[in-house]
Length: 94
Image: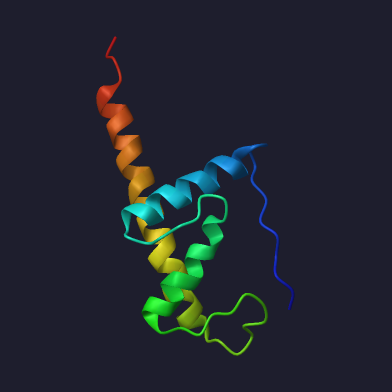
């Protein structure tokens, strides 16, 4: 099965999301190249003992891949929620 290409509903959102991912992963203590934030998954995988490689990872279990994705996605979701709550709290009331 080939790698699927994710696409964003909002045109131009990809660059902003990549920047956001890099910022969040830096906050989590990972060394992230802002030009290649997706490479953070290899550092996360290494920390978790998951043998993730740049290409074919068909032998990895869904659980292993999910651990890596969760370690990245979880902090991103928490930060999005925090930002949304902050913006709602700072919104001017009529």
